[in-house]
Image (cartoon, rainbow, N blue to C red; front, side, top):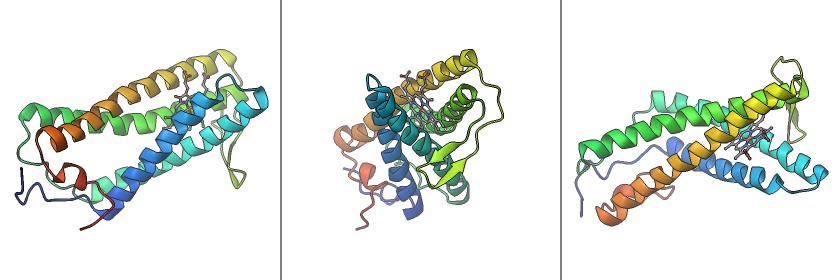
Length: 186
Ligand code: HEM
């Protein structure tokens, strides 16, 4: 069991809230994309309308999160990690940030090419502008393919990310491994 001062460090409350809010929205967005398959057109359009609005929200929250990350120092990693674990966790985190930006931007490009630059309705509250693009089915298909491929890549990274956290908690028996990112403050 690791009880030293380094392992007891935690992420700031803002970082924790952004982490779990974005995680929840990403899970919902995968669910909406998968649920829209094999649905009647009208239902699929409604589900995808929410998928697009939530995706734009994820993009905006990710920008806030990157701003927060640059202005708030994260807690040091536990000092019982080996060099390869530190390297793997850093690479995974950076790639997750890249995908949290690239996936919504490619989705936005897919929507814009498909619709010829129409805005995205944000839950009927206001419109998010479309990108200035000519309507092109071919381009929409290419962007959509890239969007789906990166989303699949994100699933692998998320599995690695969760496996890493669980390994530290269960195999390394570091009690603080999950508490670092917990909403509960003890
Ligand atoms: C982190 C945010 C997002 C995630 C995780 C995500 C995930 C996905 C997934 C898993 C699919 C199904 C891909 C497939 O079946 O091959 C999909 C499809 C789609 N998404 Fe997203 N998406 C996100 C954001 C967005 C945004 C912001 C938009 C548009 C504003 C968008 C528009 C679309 C469209 C139009 C499709 C259908 C693409 C096609 O059929 O070729 N997505 N998305």
